[in-house]
Length: 570
Image (cartoon, rainbow, N blue to C red):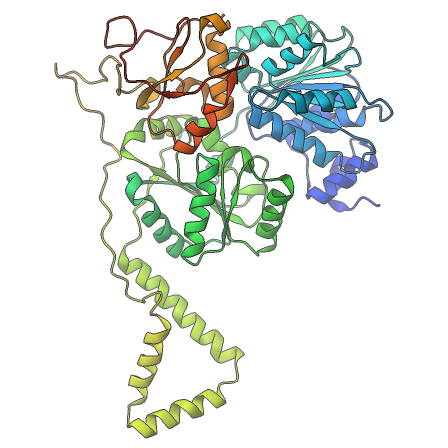
């Protein structure tokens, strides 16, 4: 199989032809800056310390060269990648599979909490070459002696600062201490706090630093807008936007997997060609959905953050954030799905009144104020429908033989002595019954985006001391939950944070106060957790103990309305 133009730039790295052919199939064109700097160093056997933001192409930067250095005859772990979340571990494992499409006998295994340990044990016993895992589950396998690191040639720490923030850094160091002294390292982090720097100095001796400066060019070339809307009117606002906004292809981002299905079905019922994209789908299903989007057989994809990572489809001209992300990096990553390869793009963000603080965080991070966007009015939608109606009529005149139909119309007019204009108007009315040219729509409530939170009773600005039902960090409304796991199970705060962040796809800083007791734990989580997500969390295990999460009605221990701060992670 020959290598065509799409992989020529990657061919300069002298990667194996099997990998270049896979890149051609994936449509990869030019390497990103982090790939250009990292791949040659890793191919030469050097360790690297990469400082780059999310969405810069880090996965390919380490996966491609490490795949190129695998021993195909050895069915034992040769590369291990540590990732902070189960979603990222799955994503990286799937990326390895894609890049290794033409490699013989290649095997990769994601290992993470929440998955049946027996499945992972069987796969490890059969033999795998690449292991991608969360720190806690990797440690579990090391303790069980089911994971042997003696043949490891490369170790990757992906999103190291996130692992630090989630309390996993001690676990990471324990794993690194079990790796061979002469193995190759690659550490990637968006920031370089002192703790991460210390780990790098200890384990990545003589590593070369690869630094990609944080740029705002991605967001600068994207027209960004914000629509203030309450939850009850989101779907109405969305359908209005879809009617008036010109786009070839688009992505709608939501928070949960179930919502991708629900919203895509609602859009299909309204006549839009939409489909869901989420992590619960098989890889084949996701690939098929993306292929249809690329070919123009699908116009709208409703996706979660994880499922859309690395998605690069040229025809995406509009990104709509139906649910605002909890962290600013996710926002930048989302809108980066449009405006690709220097093209112009547009992004619209829906924000509810309770989410104003998150909007301010995004504007601060991107260093620009999002333009206010008003939901299209009935008059605007009517104008758009009339234009489309006119175009359809013109297209029909040009493409169809209308003589037989003309004869029917003229006979109808003669037989009933009806004017030609009246007959045409009656026919036009029939055509627009399902989608009226003059729709009657209720005005959406106007919400002031600049409103601030109410003052305290003493008249000063700011929020009150946080208690039950009040706002937590970043002004996210919180509710208290009880987990049936406690000190007797040797649980620590980092275990709680890691499990919930992984399974619920919640940024760790939005997991509030944690109070661990002998037989149970209390934790504050964002208000409005979806029922299907809570049902899923019911079966999540921490220290092999089902957490059986449920809302807690009792006040936080301590006698004060304000909850104690989260316990220090050990």
